[in-house]
Image (cartoon, rainbow, N blue to C red; front, side, top):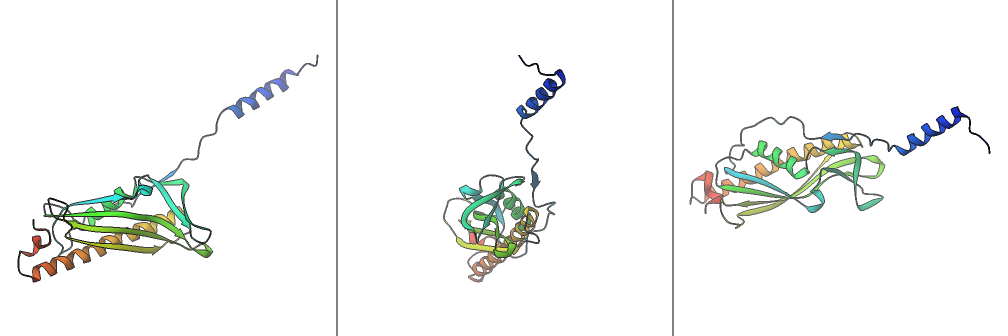
Length: 205
């Protein structure tokens, strides 16, 4: 019988034990929209009682999604080493609450979030895309007072996860601005009819 040298045996044991221990996965970078400053509600929009953002099923997790439009445009992919601090709908809802200032008004604003991803074009350029459908409802019931679809695209400063975060942050900020403009137009149109005071006209029961 051939004997194994003690030193060699010990080295082999250490090697096998190292192979048996699974390696730790790389820590994920967690992103949000940064510090959001409280702002006053834009003048001219109807007072909002609440803002609710409902995600499409594919946006229900905190995964950070992207698409390669040239190679696989129908495939949703996610960054392995980066994720959102919360599902995108929650981040968008918080940003819109700060931008539009919900309080004790009569209107409910419901946002259906259909897309929230970084899209890569040929050559490596990418952009953040936010697509949503907004519905304005009265304080009670499901009667839709007005609705509108929004599609916002903003260029990413870099072709990586951090670039996608910056682009989607900018697109979400612009979504708030476009929503404010839309709501203001609705309020002015209702006030012009002279039926009800301006702040509550669009969402009267």
